[in-house]
Length: 383
Ligand SMILES: Cc1cc2nc3c(=O)[nH]c(=O)nc-3n(C[C@H](O)[C@H](O)[C@H](O)COP(=O)(O)OP(=O)(O)OC[C@H]3O[C@@H](n4cnc5c(N)ncnc54)[C@H](O)[C@@H]3O)c2cc1C
Image 1 (cartoon, helix red, strand yellow):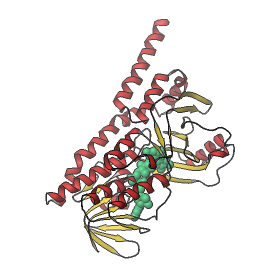
Image 2 (cartoon, protein in one colour; image 1 turned 45 degrees about the vertical axis):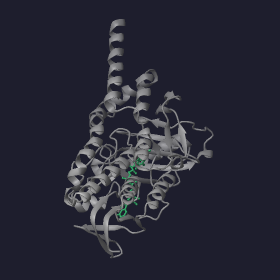
Image 3 (cartoon, rainbow, N blue to C red; image 1 turned 60 degrees about the vertical axis):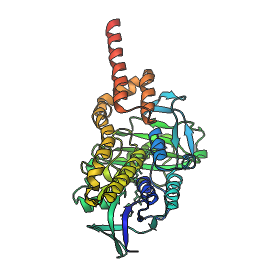
Image 4 (tube, rainbow, N blue to C red; image 1 turned 30 degrees about the vertical axis):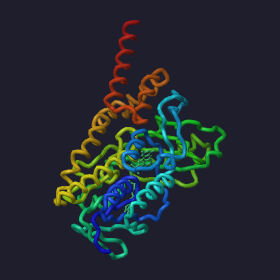
């Protein structure tokens, strides 16, 4: 039992997707997590159509049990109040990570990986995976699916974690019944944090109230969160939990030879919206397919070379967003955006198309800039 074909470190969406595909293909897989499931993970729990499509391309099972509610719109706020509201757009899915990740683990477990939960990986030496309790085993391939502060990544690339490249998020969940207002749609708030946004996402029984922004631009995120929480609920939060998220700082080199990084471990989080679950699923799938190709060809050290092109198909999606965020997040364009939003329903609709996974950043930018230029001409014409 001390030798596996693949060690998947981390049993979140990225790890579960990899373990499902590899185990279904007959590989001997160890699926590891330092937590015992069901576990909760700090997350807004908003899932796009992209996440649904990725899920359906991996798991041969229904999407329904993974989600708690479905809503077709969103409301956008500034610190002064409602800016715009759309209630008949594309579907958005909401879930708690306890529900979502447990379901994915259940599906992966059916394919027969050996599950090691409650055991933390402390280091990787070539093909050997070492655990905190002093035990270890060897494996032909390793997948690092162990989240934003990935231990696998720092073993492969020792100096790869720089706090200032990350966003810091704080979130608290309260029972939906606590607020008089029913919160029928997900809410996004601008103006409460620099280079980021705040949110109220209604799930099955709870509301996720959170804030996330670039750590280098916000030195007092805890206070900003408390202020926002008070703005929504009228009281201070009972408990505050925060964690890092790699907002747009994806790895240029997500692996070496037979060791691959997926999801947050590779930094695959949308630079503007913070969406990460869809990309964890996609990269988990691509990593598994690359390992199968390398194993079947008898060239395990080539797994990373097989992974690179599919990984790039994800980062290509992020590239325009990395540029576009400079037109959205600095104070001046942000103030203009907040002023324009009540009249800019076309832009809000396309932003929802983007969040829902029906549109990419090129299409969004074409609509947003087109509208801005048209408005500019109309105004000049009137003067
Ligand atoms: C506050 C917040 C809100 C967010 N909201 C959204 C949202 O609404 N929608 C969305 O799409 N994305 C959201 N994201 C991003 C999303 O949570 C991540 O992109 C996603 O969870 C990445 O999945 P993953 O499988 O790569 O890693 P994770 O889900 O982080 O899973 C990593 C797993 O690895 C385990 N692990 C870590 N270290 C070790 C170790 N040393 N040994 C063994 N196991 C280990 C952890 O216990 C964990 O279970 C949010 C992130 C934050 C922080």
